[in-house]
Image (tube, rainbow, N blue to C red):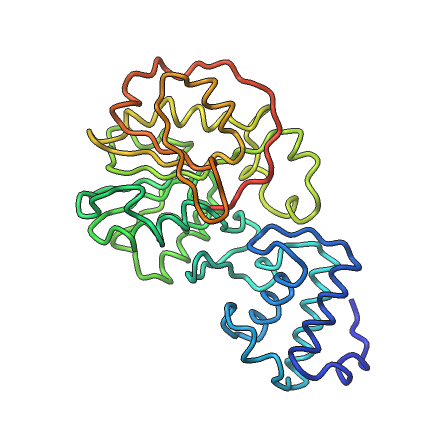
Length: 319
């Protein structure tokens, strides 16, 4: 999309560009949800990222005068966001979870997991004794963000980062390298537990695909830009969630814990697994979307054959 030269001359400060971007985004009826929830938040993220400024510090820079190359960079980013409808993190190649940056591209879903918030701010909600965690599994790792945050939260633990997508694992390897965690975080290509025979963990975390197929087909362009595989959870969205619950007990150490994000599927899973005493971990922005269950409670499952219920679940938070 060509840039009007007059725009570069008329918009001088970051405040000018922020107002311009918000107006353009509102007029284009963009959709948000990839780390931001409004045109203002999206514009602030995109502009600060484009200028290599801290994304949580807008006020100090609002009246800063921008160089012409900087203005051109922002004009191009705003135009790309509108023309392509790609989420802003794809345009700048980076997303954040609670101050931790991760590389992203279209091979992975944009990271935005509630489990990430818990790992950074309340790891004791997942495992009371951090020193007891020797092995962690991040199932459906995507960009590797949860595997990396788990390694940072439990600094004595080794972490296996599992995904079925070779492309996602390539991105995860870049993030693992950025955090210098080669010796502690191991990427593994696997369909859930298929390649993990004999491996057991003190903690399994998972943010699997959990969106109903009808909802995926109705996605706006921003969500369609992400890998369909990372969203699609079957007719009611809970296919992989059921498979993980059915098999996780065989891969947990005694006293181990499974923590899984399932979106708005709580009613379905409580119906399908009435024998499981599930614990629901709330965060600042979620209620009843992250479950916790112990190895002891999972041990009694009968193989996971459950009656699926039809439902529609909103786009998942990314891993």
